[in-house]
Image 1 (spheres, helix red, strand yellow):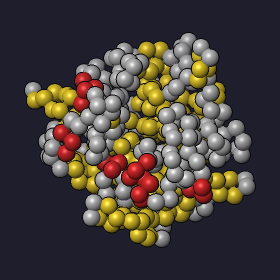
Image 2 (cartoon, helix red, strand yellow):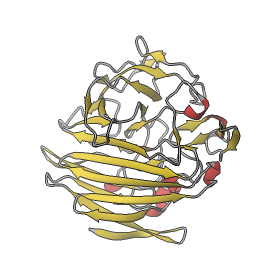
Image 3 (tube, one colour):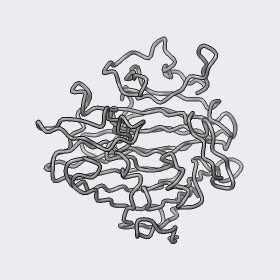
Length: 342
């Protein structure tokens, strides 16, 4: 099914609904390539597993990247500045007026994508970001393909450029597997022995540290909820994936690895994340406070969902020892992530 979902920037926004043979359903809108809704068969019927809003105006005004494709560079770039091939590039500063977050004030999550193709269980969307967009060099052409495969949402991202430019894309759904008010009692496992510590602005210090003995140790499944000094621990941090369990991804020489597992405290639903990417940013939505109702009247406040963002490390353009994120004109950026519901 396809329908109109509103208009912005003089362009119409469309919504398509995908269905798999298992009965799973996903609603995709062309604004931000957003997964607006995702329902998975459970023991009691279809269970909504993401946060979503009812109107395009609400996404534009209030959405904290609900279900969007974040980029050109997901996560943070310190000072909104990097040097590439001897040239300094200054980006738009949309994070506290000091840094660039998720590609800047006009990132891919805030643009209208073109619905290039769709069928019963898949949709392909394309976005063109011009040279100089938010300060990034090169014209970037990005394709996002969503596929519903049984109870798995598979996301295939690719991009090309006509000038060298940093690229880091991620999917930004807020997962909540049982519809509870918060995800603090969800059980979380992360396949990572190390993480990248950050400063007060959530910019990496450059260290790669062991999770052992820290609140970031999720090597064994445990509740998201954790207190330190009488306060909840806030999670907005990148984990360095161990990549010790791998499967073919469909991309040559880029296998998918097990990144983590989230399980609901009630209802029996669980989610496994598999990805070709080296990092997993975990964000607990502590700062979320959406002033309008969401799907079926839901209210989205603190800890309403958990973001499991498969990506490269934040601020990599300024950290030579982090995995390189530079895309060149003779290469194609490719990423595959699967969210597998069990």
